[in-house]
Image (cartoon, rainbow, N blue to C red):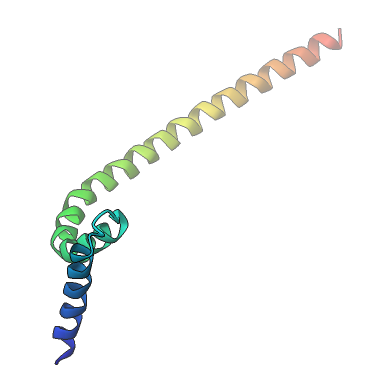
Length: 92
């Protein structure tokens, strides 16, 4: 028996044992087997769809960072102005 047949037989055997023994309520095992069988088919599609989404998230994150940087600088400037004003009035 070659290695390819052995790997296929092990997966098939495990799935067959689960069904025959009535252990189909083990959702984690079924999820894992589904990922093994369908992962290679679904992964390229998810990568094609996910790339523009990730790029959009990064772009929006950078925009938000720039806006927050400007806002923080304005708040800091306003605080410094108020502090200077209070210090001049306190000296009177």
